[in-house]
Length: 290
Ligand code: C2E
Ligand code: CA
Ligand code: CA
Ligand code: CA
Image (cartoon, rainbow, N blue to C red; front, side):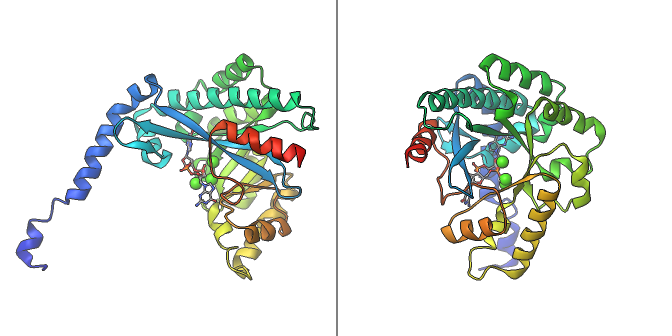
């Protein structure tokens, strides 16, 4: 019963309180979590739509919290960004992922299955806070050198919204990384209302089409407006020599539709959920022999 009197006592929403407490608790636990090794990385394969081969993987960080269990990045990345911990955390993710890429490459090169000419690549997410951190270029160079991994094995994913209205100061480190051979991907593309002509200005070589477009391909026939939009984005991207990756592919029908629309690479549960690094190695072995 919603009496006026009752409402007056409900101003303090207990669920919101609990959320705030958790948020506060998680925020204060973040620095020690990094020291204690509570973060781990799952990898999700990136699959070539033309031939179905695994071309690489995206690194997705998780937190094995001693009380709350496994927490997804949406729970703690915003907190890490707010406190600045995202810089050391992001550096840790980059270092782990690059080392993992090295291991895949060595194992793949070693099996002689024709993989060596097209070695696996690693995609790592970059927070806007890392973009503005002055150590980004140097840290990345050092991490690649220490692991003995060529820059072209690495793709850094930056969200479209982080680069909207970006000035030259913000783009400079990305340009330097791109000149070294690191790929820059524009993540969640299509959600940021950016000016398409603006793309020419950005040092990006990959567009990652947001999951919302993939969802539009779920029904058959697909939403005609979504079809037109994706068609337009793909042709524009290709005319600018960008490759197009689609996220959130959950069904074979979506994969086929997106392949027909000219998308290059796909990622999603249809191929594999994010998983431990050994899982990716199994997938590429299956791929190399089958
Ligand atoms: P994102 O970069 O857009 O990553 C894709 C998200 O979609 C991942 O969620 C992935 O698990 C999920 N996904 C993959 N395939 C499917 C599918 O077929 N269907 C559906 N519904 N979802 C799918 P996740 O792992 O929870 O990551 C969420 C976001 O957290 C990422 O979105 C990224 O923005 C951020 N994130 C993850 N790891 C890092 C990191 O190391 N650093 C930073 N700065 N951000 C990260
Ligand atoms: Ca991403
Ligand atoms: Ca994305
Ligand atoms: Ca996203």
